[in-house]
Image 1 (cartoon, rainbow, N blue to C red):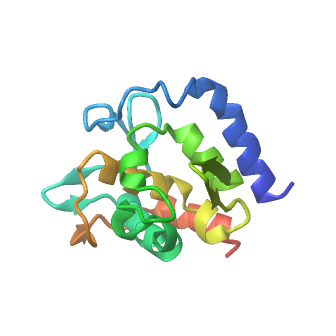
Image 2 (cartoon, rainbow, N blue to C red):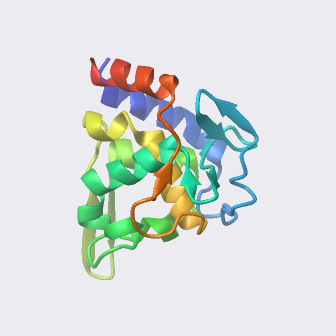
Image 3 (cartoon, rainbow, N blue to C red):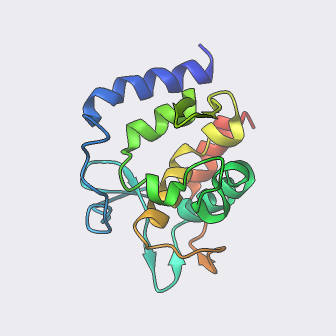
Length: 174
């Protein structure tokens, strides 16, 4: 089974748990609060990946998400998730998009039509530089959406946890 199919199946399996993403209450720093840590990855009360930012130091996954976002996403979605004339500001969108919906959109892509214009988000389910770092991207954009991460490169970050190194090696095939 290809990785794209596996990610799509996972995203579709999680989608019913999300309910209506449009009806979801706005995310906040309180909802994103860390309640659990697993190998350097932080999770909120619902078990979703979240950020940890203390005294100007971001967790590894937020930093990695910043790097990956500016490698693959900023061309359409603007610097620091601020949007462009072509694609929405993800720093705003993540306030109302839950984790399963985010996974689904990134893996499968999305087509929006309306107001006489068509926007197409391509599927990134086959792009290892994206799908191996989906949690990182989500965490970074969630931190931007909640106002916890300012614009620009985070000045300090935690060291990369061994679990992150192992996951990267496994996903990238190294």
